[in-house]
Image 1 (tube, one colour):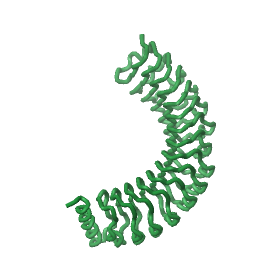
Image 2 (cartoon, helix red, strand yellow):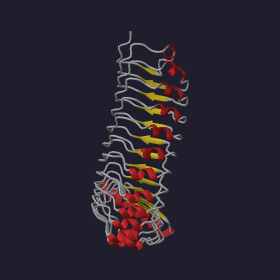
Image 3 (cartoon, one colour):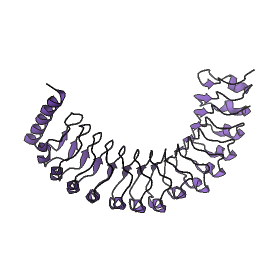
Image 4 (cartoon, one colour):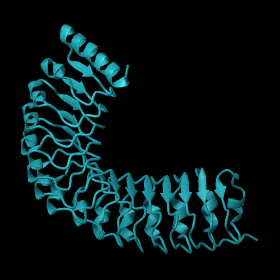
Length: 355
């Protein structure tokens, strides 16, 4: 008896039990079904349906019968398209369609105006229709790992968005209308094709997380200083050659990632980042650290591996909260006395010409 047959029997029992009890939730996750049993679509009392990982290639038109659904999780299938009847699910608040094979969305899809959470990551979407602007209740929109090259100006209609995840696409810029997304606190644009920092981001003053790692940024604009609520800024793996003094405006920042760039110096204004506890600057071109770095008394992790440092500020040993000081593969020949007294499990020095 094959696994596919056994899973069909399991699904049948669950559907039958849900029908007899008037259940409002049904979980068929990870059963090897390949097709959605039509019995599911007769369970009109359902408010939550979990059909993740069933290897489905399609959803039946009868899915539109489930007009009470508020949560539909159909992620990790092999869906290539969605039926127009999905538009009948007007009570949907959460729709998870990540890790499928969708290349486009039917226009009827954008009638789902009650949606608050929409996950479309890991598909094959190359275009986001302007109709996305109809989903004005969205708080979270996950579009990472698709093939998007641009966003429509209508994205600016989503004024309730707090989380927008666009990493692993092919975006080169953002439309000006992104500046209307005043509620955004989490913005991830890692691993795209940005060659300049999108100036519209400077208007998103509620941002607490901004991910721009693995792009092609060569500089930061003055507008970076507007983002005073940032707690995490990730700029790893770009082409930055310098930081502006305005970086010192980010007084709430706790994590700053600047690894794998071309930075040769840090501005003295770094001392203003009093909340900073993680500073990563591996794989840059630093030859000296400003003495002001010793004012960052909350630092717990300071990673400076693979730079060109020849010396350290004398007072760096005063950073008493350090649990990691990475200095491997620099040009250090000696250390300040207080650094020598640090515990060996904190200090990493391999690859230096120490005397």
